[in-house]
Image 1 (tube, rainbow, N blue to C red):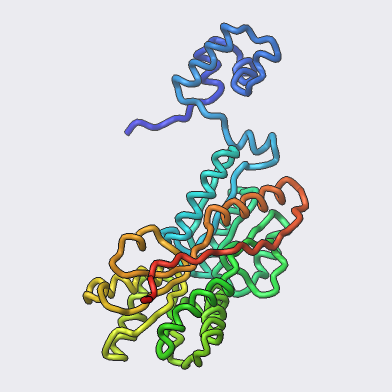
Image 2: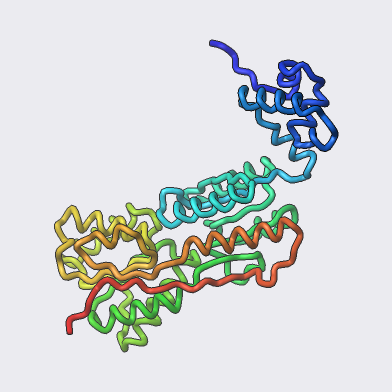
Length: 338
């Protein structure tokens, strides 16, 4: 097997018949300024393009004392919300000349420590994290070395910069509507109970029931994790327990709804009169036979706020606001009978 070899600045200099110093000046954009002949500049640049030469990021790091990379840590890249967020953030990084490195934790705190250590070892300039940890102590200590911004979820009383969607109020608004037409049975299907998204969305669920004058029953609250398989299993168990589908449900995330819909499709329930609502929206909900009312996050704005905050901190600036709570909107598909 032929051994590969990266093209170096010395290779380009040799091919162009110039010194390494001259080739370096041209490739670093200083050839014209320092009066390297136009013909020489053009020859060096043509050879660099022809041989796909790329300047060493390590040399740039030493020169700038920055890696020009950001690290993103998410629980699950296949989750629709995190996938959209990652795509939006990657676009912002590319436009700013930054490289985004993405790592997944699978909702595992031990794995999260490993991937964060790996990103720090690669000398990322800052981290944006949707943490699965129940304490921020590791990140507080790490923030002494580089800027860290939490998003989507947070630890109570954390002083770290964060960007999240305010979930309680819009969830309450949606659940109140649901409860006024289904007051005798509404189930909450959520993720891990100690994570902030679950706590906030459950708080909104309870507030919505209270507004509608509905007294919740303990058995209405069901917890699992945020994987679609967990949504499937919780809904399947609920249907088996009741001997029928529930009259109404609220799922705490898009992934959970994915699992519920898979069960409903397999058991021919998509045309039933079950009322379904969820936190997080998905464009495919517009194509289903069942109407799903949702709380819709502004994910592009979530990415923009995270990017703005972390790059300001990297630049040594003091942002006006380091704790940013974004508003959400209701996406209503179910039409109440007149």
